[in-house]
Length: 200
Length: 280
Ligand SMILES: Cc1cc2nc3c(=O)[nH]c(=O)nc-3n(C[C@H](O)[C@H](O)[C@H](O)COP(=O)(O)OP(=O)(O)OC[C@H]3O[C@@H](n4cnc5c(N)ncnc54)[C@H](O)[C@@H]3O)c2cc1C
Image (tube, rainbow over the protein chains, first blue to last red):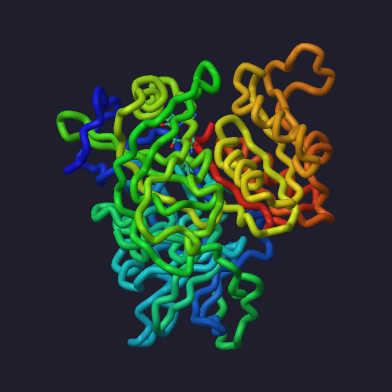
């Protein structure tokens, strides 16, 4: 039974699209562990592979030449804000996976980013039209502080899984925890089950 | 697209680094905390001291989640940094295993029209109870046994977790050289000014610099305005000393300070950031 907070009156709008413990945010807050990296697009490339093996690699121009999708999704940050109907443009992870061989035993993924950030998730969560490499936000190029030039977008999980400045996805045969997952945050991170921290 | 099976060097992203994470994993249950004291810091900020039965301590820099629940069952959560971690930096392993009541402190800056901050700062009185859980965040933390020099840069209420580091350093008797640069709008907005002055005057290892963005105190001869590269270079430990750098505040402040420090030669890998609040 939750403790009632004497005299506390809600002020924010509620919405059935808000997961438990989240509030509606109209701005776009930023959560990162360090400085925003500087990126040179002429040498930038995105890699899909496994540890020590690059199975496919796309330069910036090559990524932009892949079929793009415009998606409108709700995003949920573990710091409690939810943003409804955010508009993104990017390449479906399905499109990228089609370019490589995936072993039957490779059911886990670790995303790696500029600045050393990593995050893990099951491969199944990146398949079936649920995840993208996003490079556009709200009709413009994705701003640096929000992960530009490109970030992972996995809107059905808490937003730390949508790794900013993503450079590589490694397919793994065993789960390997990423940056926040090693530091107290939940391995899976489903906002609807409020999986914020270890043990949730 | 180019397809290759050649191994590719994985650069620095592959090297395992220290995590600052505890060896023992623990779930974070909700605690019922009781307001033991409240102190007005400025016209719009209040510090709350909270007694928390079962609190196992924290490292300076960590935060808690506070949960409020209304009569009708509506409930909401926000994060607040610990202004004092409750154990003054004593590592978990040396804490008593029996659950004890610890006293922690938060400092809440009122966000006008906010749902939670005006309630915490203006409505709560001594004896009231709120739910919270933590400590959260094993990255934006200072380890009290670490002798390396430390540079702290705070904007507005971003000073709160940095104050936790300063207080812990003092309590733990650490000799790690500390410099704190704190940027606020006007002298009336300065948090913890008297305590910081007192600590700095008795301790040559702690240097505190104030920066004013709107209005400086009478007699101030330095610049007034946003921290620029010159001000940061003058007030901060030089990159050659390889300080740990902790930057906290509103997002635009953190973006600006962290990228300026990188351009001044600080190693991006040594800069840890915490961003409060929305984007500008
Ligand atoms: C890790 C972490 C630690 C934090 N530590 C502290 C702390 O020690 N002390 C503290 O006072 N706050 C801290 N915050 C901010 C705090 O969690 C709340 O965001 C803040 O108190 C506003 O909540 P609210 O319910 O009053 O406003 P809300 O009802 O959430 O917001 C009202 C409106 O104000 C805007 N807003 C929200 N926050 C700010 C802001 N900071 N400045 C300007 N506008 C804002 C929102 O975009 C929204 O439109 C921390 C946040 C994080 C993520």
